[in-house]
Image 1 (tube, one colour):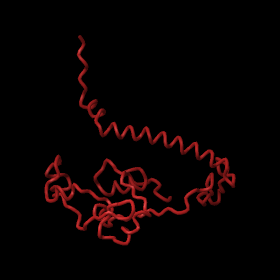
Image 2 (image 1 turned 180 degrees about the vertical axis):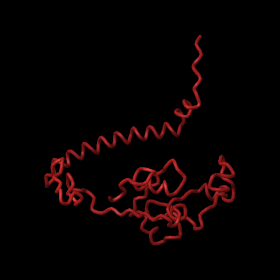
Image 3 (image 1 turned 180 degrees about the horizontal axis):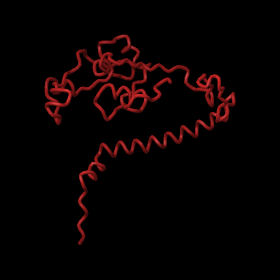
Image 4 (image 1 turned 45 degrees about the vertical axis):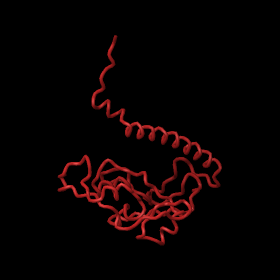
Length: 186
């Protein structure tokens, strides 16, 4: 009787729940992208103005703004990006585990990192309450914005492989951890 091969540590990592969910998300993202690209072709065909796939570029003004391939659907987009601003866990990102483990050392982390000693877990300074019809948990810090919670789109799924803030900010704005790439709104 043959024994099944033992998985290497790398193989076990590939089969971890986290990696499975990440890879499944990539697959679903690919399906979503295919749907959006098909919808883009349909929208381009129905567009009121026809722009060639390869735009004509004026050599005297190569960086002048040009029209898109089709009419835009969004009327307004507001991205609030405030590096150095109030922490997300003190405003809109409710994490009940922070209250549960307040004052304790983070489990699974070394007591000293290259940045220095690891601090204790700290709960938010402000109390969180459910707001609006959706019950979105927001803190008392921004009560006016909390009252409009149903009017906002909160994205809590962004993450990066680095814990360093400058590289994380680059990744958020450009998709790359290094500098020198076009950013949001470019």
